Image (cartoon, rainbow, N blue to C red):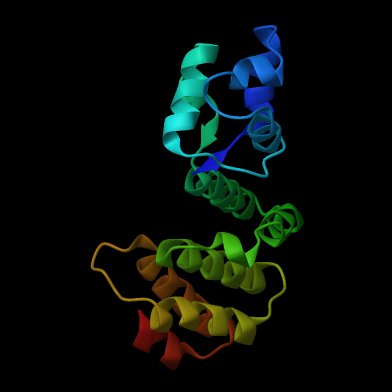
Length: 171
């Protein structure tokens, strides 16, 4: 979860409260300042009290970082389907490697990187390398859609390389 300090500041100003007034009896004015600059995430007790004072819910100032990443991957998928490879590459390049916290995030990242190398750059060897990362580095689950899509993409890459024997082995 990520705290939206800028949102907290907006709600505070809309209520006509100073940082000191919002903090009174809950925390210090300095804590409010740090929260609003996104430099400090207080404990949930303090955050809940601040939200109560502002008459807002926690959901209004907290963002699920995984949802943000999911939205980016959804955009990349749409752009690739629309053959807007440059825009998809820009979106993918904006993802910091530290944002990839889960196995699933890493799978999606390397799958889309491989797809862009396959479709945009026609760099089949690099695409195969990234697809192999998805297939080899992450535990396989029967219902893992990225494992399935990557397997199909590997077959496609071998087909593009005019190696139908390898393509047949995969698919």
